[in-house]
Length: 362
Length: 257
Image (tube, rainbow over all chains, first blue to last red; front, side, top):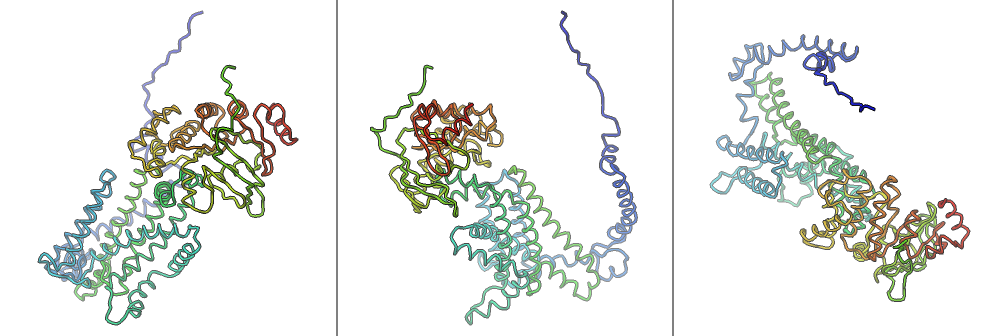
């Protein structure tokens, strides 16, 4: 019997043109079903209608670095409202000559954020970097030593205030939330009850009412002569509020961890703290990264509510600019600018969360 | 057969490492374990079998207090199990446990799974713990997987890692809670082989299992449980060839064909 050999013919075939490249992509994504084709055409028609006038308004007919008078004569966008008032919008009532201090602080903060974004920089050094950075930022903002002119916290405003409230609001709320979640699942009845009451009470009221309470009611309970910084009070209200929401999300994560993990950790003889720190929390917190970041994003945006207790965050400085008779009527441009800033903040947070999920292999 | 492990145990020379006296346990109103009396000598190997729901898993889970008993006494290594957390942690460090579903820590590598207990509970230096871990990984023949995560291993491999993880704590007793019943059939043997090795080194073992071949060749004593009670106990020889109790006879006729 002759040995049978199968010959593999090699085909030098390429996929049909219609399935690769630009045409392939368009066919697969835009026209892959009758409904999608119709939707694509409708949206295209809408864009054709909308894009030219918007572009014309925003870029072609717009003015960028002019006085308010020039603005009134143009039909396009008046971006000058931002460029001419940028320093007030960003730094508010912080003394004009000292603006380099909040600028440096914000740059340090962004630098630290940027480093923290990448997993390969995560180390003890980065942690020390944060601690040193926070102290430097604090000294820069507050002044009073090293020949820096002291600046009262009541003058801290604009983007520095927004970032301050967000940064501390989020970083302090997270551990507090985790502790509340653990407390709510505790077997000790007193601890459990306290945590349940706390979480349900805080979640039961809007942030605005907490802010009002912190600014109006809380001082009434203090002995005469004692005052607590207004920013600090708002900060605490934001922390307490956000923590309650984080607690519930983390509790969900804790419940998602199989019982076997708890038992295996216990069977090794790990005590409660170690069991949670080494086995349960690393898994639970990883599961809830998406909803946690959701809460952090909304907390970041909610800091703009401090406007109602008279703090000048970036929202309020913008509104103040628009209240100036000279610049009245250009609110669209100003709010678009603020929206872009908030969007950049939120978008980088959600990017960070996706990046984190990838590096932690969830 | 050349190496039929001598299934006789000379109890006179040693003192019991586990003593359970008149122990009862309820889940709500349901009496899961009733009137359990059991004494385990150092080096003794016991296989516990019985129909599902008979309380055999609950019994061994009471020994390291993953379940709490309500009446009677359990004394492990001269420490009585009570609500004292420090005592419970001490006992758990001395008693290794292998679960049906392995329960490896999925976020840690195999090596980290093994060194976690020694480093945090036994306070061993990291290097020493890693050496011990590699020794046991070699022993269960998966040293080359040390850097992988549990999810990348087969069921049999995971269970061998779980056994190695317990051994790294240098336990005095090993509890096995149906270690092979979640495994694909072709992986049962590799896990049983590791357990037989362990038996030959003189480890004290309590094994909840339906592997009758394993019971025959390794156990000193086979316990049969039904409805929360120890119905019959005997040497494997007697237990399989000459069961006394009617329920035991019925059970054996159903699982031995």
